[in-house]
Image 1 (cartoon, rainbow, N blue to C red):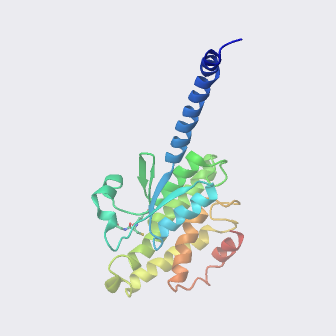
Image 2 (image 1 turned 60 degrees about the horizontal axis):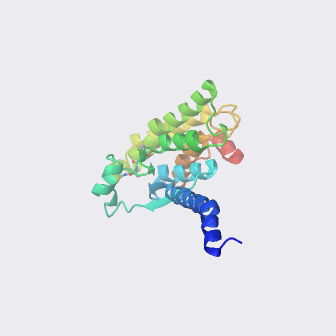
Image 3 (image 1 turned 135 degrees about the vertical axis):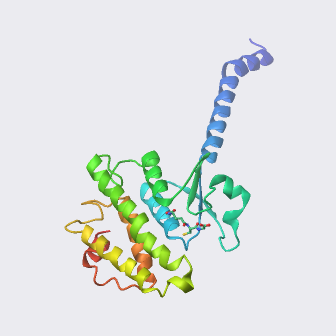
Amino acid sequence: MIPISENFDNYRSSFCLPALLLNVRGLIYFELQQEMTIDFYYTLVSCPSRAVLLAAKSIGVDLNLKLLDLKNGEHLKPEFLKINPQHTVPTIDDNGFAIGESRAIITYLQNQYGNDDSLYPKDPKKRALVDHRLYFDTGTLYSALAQCYFSDPKKIRDDPETIQNIVKALEIFDSLLNNLKFAAGDNFTLADISLVVTVSTLDILGHDLSPYKKYSQMVCHS
Ligand SMILES: N[C@@H](CCC(=O)N[C@@H](CS)C(=O)NCC(=O)O)C(=O)O
């Protein structure tokens, strides 16, 4: 008969210690999982922030939402400037990897966390088309919108030239869609997310989108 104390010692050494270690490992893993959230700095009035929210949802990645009040200058506080010296939203901080610019963020999220490449094809030509639309949005379409509405509203909003830039950009966008089901081909991609956010904002701001028939068809598919 083994004395209880010895039995207990055996039990402790043969089972308890490994179990304890396993639990500790499990706890550490759990803690790490808890910490592995992606901080997302945003405001909802910001088109590029909304594009990131939509893209994250499509990719299936969770974001830890951190609303910034731009009116009260929260984006200019030293703690945010450390994360993004450009002080713009959207910005993400993926466990120390911080990056701004919505289109860089959505392609990063897709490359890092996407389950397949449908939203951002690996095929060089297909990807080039998606990139083209993303650059077209940032450099031409969204930039025309931003110049009109976010520069000096009183001076610029009534300026026929800035309004004309939006019309020109919409016309180019519509002609890019020629024979395409979606912005960059036959499939829904990150390009659709970026562009639909920009064009739907123009819609909300009162721009007449009825002349852009191919865009309307694209939205129906999306
Ligand atoms: N091209 C940038 C635009 C970012 C941007 O200008 N964000 C605005 C809000 S929509 C902002 O943060 N403005 C504050 C500032 O520039 O200080 C993107 O796509 O992320």
